[in-house]
Length: 209
Image (cartoon, rainbow, N blue to C red; front, top):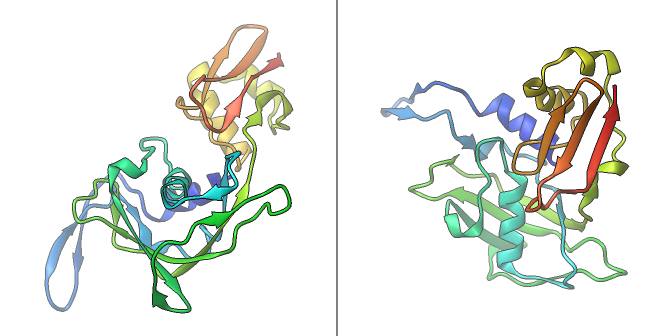
């Protein structure tokens, strides 16, 4: 569901080369292979969390943010210590306060925060503006239940190694990298199978050709 967010980052902030940022005071190298946090506006306003617990701790919250910022090349966790979180209450810096999720409360209260790249971060740059983030409960998606958009003739023609990019182009809310699914093709079918460690998908989807 965060694929639109990631596509935004990939379009705006992630490039294959480096350039030079010039200001009126100094010039310095700017690594544009990193995700630029300052471009975030409302992309983290509503973020899914998969959990059966009724309390969302700070570690859980931060891990969800790392997950939302996942790319094909990077899936961070709290242990990476690449992001610094500052929380606010009516504009005043405040300690973290655990959030509630129950059968009747499927969305948390919004969290006012600022997310900054750590000084030694390898995958992020600068910081977000002050934003509001709400978490909502989501279940691991069963691949067999997905309603994918595709053209059967395209699937027949495309080689196996191009199918991931094809499905993601046609379906903006999916994230089919090899941490989550394995896509295979035979003369008669395309099979999408969730890897055992995926926290996004489960099961198998077979498309007959």
